[in-house]
Length: 457
Image (cartoon, one colour):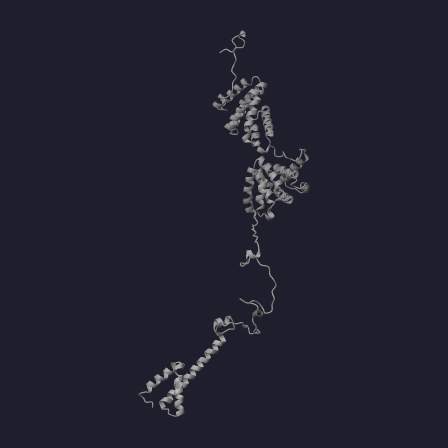
């Protein structure tokens, strides 16, 4: 019987039944069922029995609901799913949010990460892609790597080609220039190469212009075409007003370049004909007229001598002939500045000893005031630094070595040479050491006519 004294104990005991597990209650239920069958229940046991039934029903309801939620969340692959009411579950929902869809999966089930495609689809063989990170060289074969060279713009081309052309002026190897240009991606700017080379040659020497004409011939067919060269000269004819600011003789020089290019078959023969009656610029007209005049002249095969002497590239015999002409012209005109200018144009500083040698020989073979004029010329060339000390000494030493042979043609060669060397020393043209090394023939004095040719001691 439940009294006020034990009511608190009964409530605590019932609460323990709610918290107890099923293994703790099943045995008691069996005992209570046995008591119910025998009809020996007390009021306290009856209250406990009802509490146990309610607790058992709640546990069974809670257990079934958890099993159903677990069953629904498990997917076909056996992985647990997410609650459809959660935000994450809404993101994975395949149903149309607009309510107009048919409830089918996207792309017919053939799309998505880790999906092999729709059922029943047969895929053809695809060639392996070399850019695929899974590409295997050993399985697929040898891999050929190609280097992509970007096309040069105007500024980059000028910065790259200018050093190549300037270096070419030093070594003169056109094949090397062609090899270097072939490594560049010139694109549609190939015509700027001859234009840049000719512009540099306009500011250079005659030898540079000769080398530029040869370079155009070497590049034709390898790097350039006849159309590229024609386009380059067409551009330079239009830029003549600007080129004259740096090179006043640009129209005449450009005309010589055009004539040489036509003679070397670098430009088409009808290049000049295409400009007849179409040129308004006076400078361009002067350049074209210069080219027409040069091509109409009979200069042998081509215009190989259009640039005059080409420095050390010319044969030695040709240089000797040029220096002889220079000295003879000076003896006739007496113009020291012109003689100096002509010697500079020869561009052979290593061969200036030949000029000294020819000048001394002319003094020995000529008469009059030739010695005085030659001393003036050598003094001017010495003071200007055009003839160095080494070249001056070498020229005189060559004459000293060949004096016995010269004496056969000029009996007074020793006497004339001594006077000329003394005059040069007085004008500070040669050194004292060089003057002392000049050979002199001693005088043979006989005792008498009857001494039989004995020389007096």
